[in-house]
Length: 528
Image (cartoon, rainbow, N blue to C red):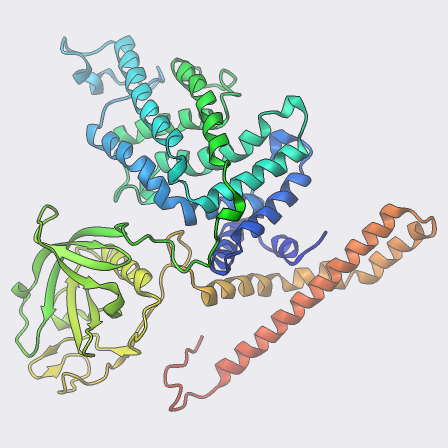
């Protein structure tokens, strides 16, 4: 039956569906309703699939929503499971290759102490290394049931039941496992192994050698996720030496999935969430140049000291080095602005400021210099993300510095004068790790409906008379299917009409808001 979600899926393009899926997941997470939301999409997807081999293979809203859901609620779990082995692979940087066409004997001299290794020795060494890495990965995964977020386990449990009910035949016994492993292994763990930086497991992309190791491991893990059903049927027969360990992993994967969904749905409290970060998780870390403004003084270049910073959802702490035991801490709850600094303030590029307010209401500014503009943007966004829901955020700030008895930006002499520029709070809003921001997320859905309203109007309203004419003749023969089809068509038209009314109301509200003249009570009204 048609619903608002089905119509939204129809008007979105394939290119925008991932953003829409992520936005919807965050909206329902924020409302504490993500479990029934995903169950609705998954049930609809399962019921519309006749061939179990094609289940969730398309870029449907259900597939994309599940993928974004796992990233939003499961990324910290992914880090706990994979980060140790990923770090080990990066540090060891072993030469690994199985494809005879790609083996470079000159790059593998360290494998044999006798000189250049033979092709057989390279393959034997590579198989051993890959088996070791894959065993470590599988052991970490299958022993991680208790670490997996309960809400993810409940979603998988419901998915398992929907698939089992739809495909109960003995020959489809594995389909209920494949539905879960397809998301768990093929859309989360394997991509994270392939490109760790995109999942924030590493700060930089892998070099060529390490990247090849990760690719071969990702291929092997994909085969595990497919329960070994496609082994031997592909073109890459050189992967055959890994088939035994892959097949041995299948039984443990099924056992793991059985344990994963062994959870009481009612015991899981799906409370509304406001952010995806856990307090103990380090969101970002690295060296920065730091200076803390402490009253009137002449700020010089050498006033910036190199310090190592750690950012979590609770604090921004720093020390002389990563190993230094004594740390200074800035509480995130005290942050009231995070902004760029003009270059002429210190004659330095890529400087930002973190303005905090202490318990006495006094403002303090910490200046941080980043090594390049990309790092500056990353730190700005990261600190804004963890402080986005703080109370007492400042409406304005000084993009300059107070030097020579005046602000370099507005030339006001008073050090405590109100800021001369409007502050910013925007974060990426498109990344899995962005905080939940219902206002911004519903704006994205409004934009999609605005762009798709002509399609909605043409498909459901302008063709109303034509559809009625088509339904008239079958109705005379009293065919139940025609009556049912007409009912669905009428419901779809009613939903489309309601959506178009909502879009029109919102458009009028936007126009009214934009046409308002700024007054004393609204000095910072946005123009767009």
